[in-house]
Length: 207
Image 1 (tube, one colour):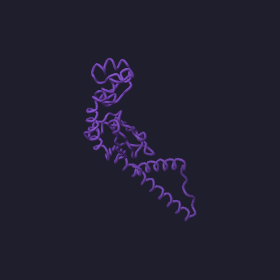
Image 2 (tube, one colour):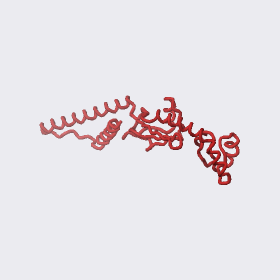
Image 3 (cartoon, one colour):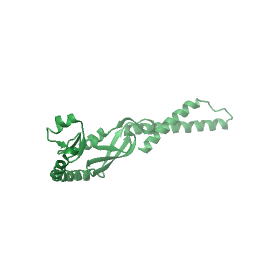
Image 4 (cartoon, one colour):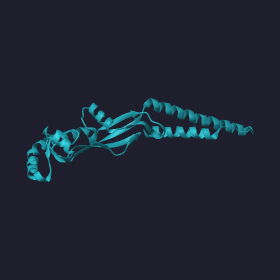
């Protein structure tokens, strides 16, 4: 059933919007609570009159939405998270997290109104869009960075790995000078460890 909202309903939409909901929900909640009226073809004239009556309210709420937009545009939310190899997060950032973070800054935005350009499962920068009202949208940025303590730990591991490589290279050079065979180690294990550290280091650089 199509209904035109006469009041803003958080789970449905803004005043003046035509939404499609179940007949039961419309008759048992929306219409009795004067949150909306039926918007079918049978009452097109009544609908047109209703839209005219709502014009002032729509204009007021649109102006409020424009005001909220001005606080969102240019905003960057930063999240500090732990991440694994290649910068993959141990827990993705969701639109609920974005809504909560905006609320902490005094900006009330329902999570259903927020969309993100890509799934936020990795370290990096993302863009989110908020639909505040019909024709009123705002974008803000998200920056997900690695936990500083974890970043320092990985940097220390990378430095240690590079130092081991230098020591092995020096030992091999010395053995060659003395005509000795260099000590053999499990190259597969070493390569795997070096690759893991390289991947983690790359994640740090991207953050």
